[in-house]
Amino acid sequence: MPVNRSTTLRRGLAVATALPLLALAACSYGSKAADDPADQKIAAGARKTDGLDSVKIGYFGNVTHATALVGVQKGFFQKALGATKAKYQVFNAGPSEIEALNSGSVDIGWIGPSPAINGYTKSDGKSLRIVGGSASGGVKLVVNPDKIKSVADVKGKKIATPQLGNTQDVALLNWIAEQGWKVDAQSGKGDVSVVRTDNKVTPDAYKAGSLDGAWVPEPTASKLVAEGAKVLLDESALWPDKKFVITNIIVSQKFLKAHPKAVEAVLKASVDTNKWINANPDEAKAAANKQLAADSGKALPTDILDPAWQSIKITDDPLAATLESQAQHAVKAGLLKQPELNGIYDLTLLNKVLKAEGEPTVSDAGLGVKQHS
Image (cartoon, rainbow, N blue to C red; front, side):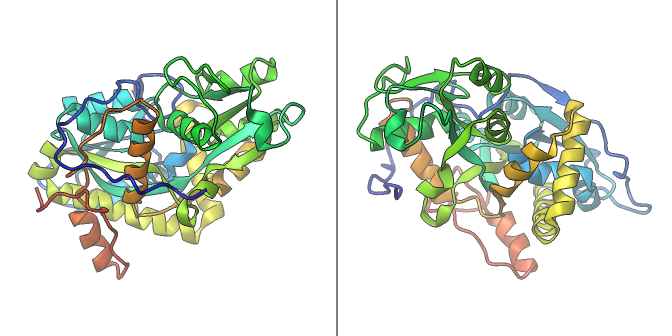
């Protein structure tokens, strides 16, 4: 099913406030400081970046945040920042990371498209910029094979999403509409029962028989498969070139303006990390799992980690056109008023890093700042 790009964003519309619940799939709100990995050391003779004592980096304990997990575990961020200490905060939900960014307790972070859109529109375009990409894919519709054997069988069934208005919730509602079925977005009632269920309890709810399936990110999808579910649809199949943004890099506009060298250093570390991940997939998978264990106290078992990791594509490209499409899907579902997304991207520093690395530059799909800020 191709993405409908015929409805472009109408520039100049009054900025509309997005739903507070438009957030990345997550277990719960809140955050915690990450433990420093053993190999994160400041090199002798290193200098501070932009004169900063530290840079505060946020991310989720989720395989879709593989760049951050591996970058932390392998010391890429610390190496790029020199004598400036890389400090880390692990989040469980998009709204809490946006709040931390707005308060200055986080400077730069990895986050999904919906909370980035939400944070930008709620602040009238003043809070953040998307400065880089990180991952594509990693979202699946998994179902009970005894009850659902084809797409047509989804009608009348109970399908979970992580949260009202979150990235996967919007994707499911859009897919339902594409099938010609009707669902009330707010209540989740209709031809399909959309059940908003916390990712951490979805596997147990499925096991208990209260759900027939779920449209969820990794590793929740693979946890369900481990419980006997089958993959009916990989969301990447619905997008051009099988690519859509699942994780971006955002930075507070205040920090970007005051400390562009620090932002550039983090982006250099991200590009280097992504290159290493793609060149060393097995080692990278192990490093990501090691950091997940450090952050959560529990590593993922192989039968869950392997398929989850395989479905995620690591990329420097923020896939800006797909973020625009996702915003329009939320508008169409009635979960979001028409947003003004002009200026949400500033890819100046990322493209500078990519050029220096001899890599192709990436596009902001016409949603970038007119000049570096």
